[in-house]
Length: 481
Image (cartoon, rainbow, N blue to C red; front, side, top):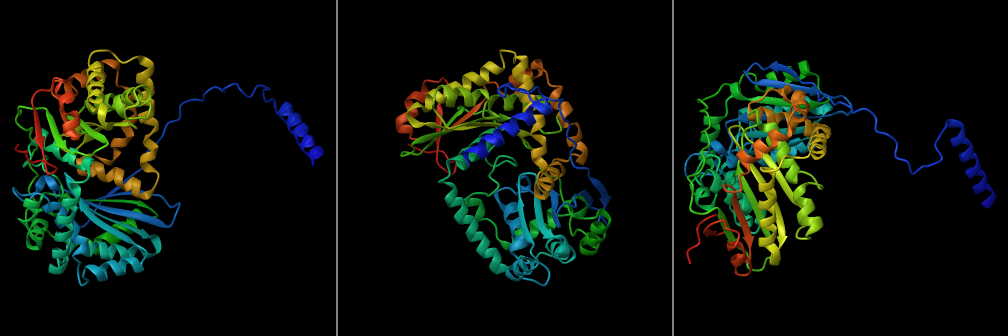
């Protein structure tokens, strides 16, 4: 056995010598040329009902995903006092049955086909998505068509889903991250505004609507002339268009879908420090945010680079300082969220409770430094390369492809937007980052939300100079002491 092993090593050594391998395997080989990435190509068409069709064919596997995007049917269109209605109505499109099938028979029929369907809403749009086997696409698309054009809104399903929503709102109180984002959006846009209220709604708003309201919302906000259908996978564009025309081609709106309200900034309050008490929390959740901009804004690339530099990767400035150097947190996440009319910049972390104020102070300091000191060229190049090289990850599966292009449809952008993404990011200079930081990350205008044991950290937070703090409960309502 030993003799055979020695013989293998000798043969391997000869082979290396013959092909010219270097003897020093510790040397790092030089990098090759930077590879370019081409996003999936989209074939565009028009359906008989007036909706747009975007198709990214990929015949690698016999599966496909199709998502219906309805801009203007998201939570931004919730009527005053009825926050959560859009999301409730969207969920009922599927769960409340469609055509001749109730909710349960519809789910069973889809399951029998090996298909999965879901319906939901976000801020700017509502969605219905189906994942299916290619062999069953005609039957599945017919069921999708009935969900889009003939939802039943069955009373029993409406009551069940209404109770589920109530339970979800109650459970939200125990999720500090969800509470923090609820508080931040309300502070930035106004608690009752189009962009400021939670998509799920509140207990008070939930009590103001039911199944009939969901039906009315659907009739008012779902219209084929604003709809975009995005598909990816094993589908032929012409065959898919024909199948969708058979399923929804005769659909005509029964009402006029109004444009969603333009979001507004909330009036300046007396406090930028908003606190929610969690007496027994081992960590304090910290969320720092500001109003950003829409993806269509020319400054979007610079803002995305600036935010990624702060906390977009494991090696970013905030993570390196708070985790590696100070040991205060497991990580920091900074995101520039882009919505149709505006957006939110958010920096989020959970800090070891006794040092919560120290961690927040470091976040504010590093954010402020970005607006004062130009970014070194090497650091800027690394951040931009990470964003550009990360683009292929957005298209790894059919569902991911559909998700990426559906986001564009909801934002009112064309499907070729990704083609210019790399160039826009690489064109951002150090001066652009500084300008974006000054415009959107000014520490004097940031809103800070801290959720933790106020009895232990309140005094230290007060020393940060953020002004008078306002205490809220887990629903975002002021606490009266």
